[in-house]
Image 1 (cartoon, rainbow, N blue to C red):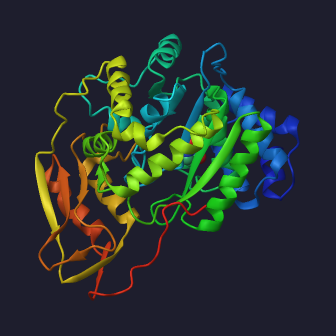
Image 2: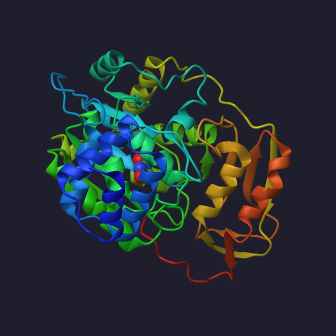
Length: 422
Ligand code: URA
C-alpha cells in the first residue's frame, strides 16, 4: 500500500478496509510512514470520521503494535477504571485500594498529565520514595498480595498509540472520537483486564465539553470493550466544576487520604463510591459494602500497603509549595459558578502540570478551593489559594482564574448539576 493513497482515501471520505488500517499502523510503528503523513491521516479522520468496524480495526492494530499483558492465573478477578480526565480528578487514588479491599485485583496503568488535566502518576510521585515503574512480575506479585497497583504503562503497551498521541497533541487532532476511543481502549484491552469501568467526562474541564459528544465517546468505547471480550460499562459525569477542593499534586494526595479516612469532600466520596460499586458488580461482588470499607479503615489499610509496595512512605509529610497567594471574593452573595477549566489552567500555570512532555512538575503546586457552588460567600473571604514554588507564576494563574467564579445575590438559584449524569 501507499501512505498517500490511504490518506487521500480518508480525506475523500472513503471507508478504509482492514488490511489498509493494519498496514498503516504497522508501517507507522516501524517508521515507514512518516510523522507528517500520520498527522495528515489523523486530521482526515478527525474531519471525516470512521465507522464501527474501522474503529475496531484501528484499536486491534494498535494493540498488536506491542505486547498484550495477561492476568490469567491470578486467583482473583481483575477490573480497572479509566477516566477521560478532569480537574481535581484524583478518584483513582482512593478507588483502587477501596476496590482491592474486596479481594479484587485492580491493575491501574496510568499516565502523566499534559495540558490542564492532571496525571495520576504525577500526583502519586509527590509521596516520598514512591516509584511509578513496576516490572511485569512485580505488578503481578503486588496484585496477588495487595490487590491494587497504580503504575506507568510499559513502553511495550500499544507503542503505536504513544507515537500517535504525541503527534495528535501538536497537530490539533486530539478531539476525534475514533482516535480517542481507539487510543484509550487499545491500552486497556492490551493491559489484560477482564472488566473495565469508564468515567467519561463532559463540561468545561473535560476535553470533550459537549455532553452529546461525551455520550458518543462512551458508547464507542463500551462497544469496543464488548467486541474485545472486556466487560465494559461507562458513567457519564459532570466536569464543569472541579472535583473536590484541590487541583494539583500533593494537595490531591492529601484530599484522597481524607476520603480513605472516611471523610473528604462529598463529591469526591460520591464518585469514588459509585465507581467502586460498578467495578465490584463487574467483578462479581455486587453486594460489597463499599461505604463501610471507607469508614472502617479497610480501604486505608490497602492504600498504605499499596504505597509501601512501590517504595513510598505513606506517613511521610508531603511537599509544600514555597509561595502562596489568595484570591478573594469581591462581593457578598452565593457562589453559583466555579469553572473547572479555569481552575485547571491556573493549577497548570502554577507548575502542577507540564507544558511539554518530559518536563518536571512541582509537587506542591496547585489550587486549593475554599468554597463550592451553592456556598454563601462574603466580600473579602478567600475563594482559592494559589500554591507554587515560583512567585513569578502567580500573575498568570490569577489571570486564568479571572471570571472563573461567579457570585450572585444571596438567595439566587444555583444551577442543578448532578455529578453522575448517566
Ligand atoms: N487519553 C488517551 O489515552 N488518549 C486519547 O486520545 C485521549 C485521552
